Image (cartoon, rainbow, N blue to C red):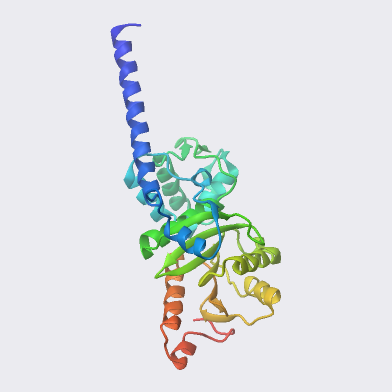
Length: 308
């Protein structure tokens, strides 16, 4: 091996090490959000421990699609991109297909121009290989079973970033009567919040999913719970009906496609944005627990037949 070849090899090895160090630094920042000194519990763990429950695992990052790029600005852009419904659908279809001859075939929910911008960004994030000349593409990100855990992570990030709420996602407990995972758990002004996240459209949600959610509510007894379906379609056509059938109780429209049941259970879609709909529900919840008068409380609810 010549001196120039040795020099090139050393430079390549150094660049690889620098990349690995940058990645570890980024991971340490992420884990710092959920790591506490020995003897201390995460606020969510503390609250559920006081309710007699034991968390066995949480934050399954191995199931989450995150940029392979070490650039923090790419991570921030990725978070912002996930705020777009069309991008979430595009990414979900991308990981489902894996590879293809023409990335325009996965742009059913956006224009070719927007799809091209998505492909360009995902290539920056090192999640996809794409050939500009042939339009072929291949997903090269983490191997995951579905988009579900990524959506849970994104909702958890919204809770942490926008509501400053200590949050865990993909939470598992030991020895709960009904079992199952809790998608997102947060502490908001001392209140335990449970968010069930459905990445499937309403047609993919059936009564057993609703019944399992209701059973998990019995086990956890959160102060506030949400059943969030990642769709811009109407919730009243199917999801609300499933809850009425499963409980035999009234479901009232709060505003647009955001609904409410007794026990502070909110049933919501993601039209407008996930963060905006979460915010509206939190405003309603804290207005109620804050002791507002009945007339004002009733004004926040609409008859089932109206939507504005």
